[in-house]
Length: 140
Image (tube, rainbow, N blue to C red; front, side, top):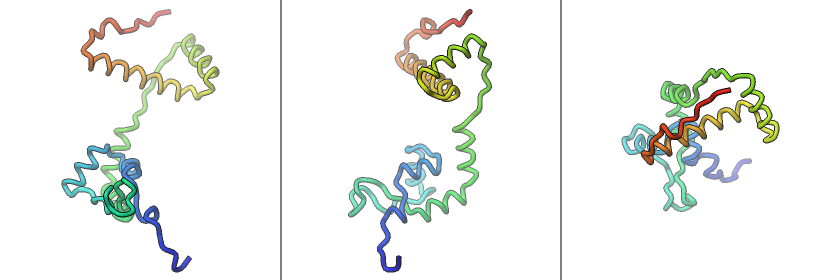
């Protein structure tokens, strides 16, 4: 509608939206902004109307993504990888039963279980505990 003022949401992305679009980590975004490799936010937390968040110009972010498609596609490949896993029939049955109880998708269940296990290993190694004591031996 003519004469209607436009909100900052129409012109700006939040930091979270920029991270989702570029697939960067927060640390990488800060580093890229600091070194001038990425457009700086137009509104900072202390600015009037910023509501405690950084606001990046949509046009500048979208332009950066267009100029850096190799970077974004490389990050996308790095972030999502496919693994082929062989699971025995008995284990598949257990997974399906658990998924039925939880009313969830089997692939999501397997992915969540793998990530949970990886987190547990990370916690164990961070505490420098003897990991040999925590390895599960799978057998029939």
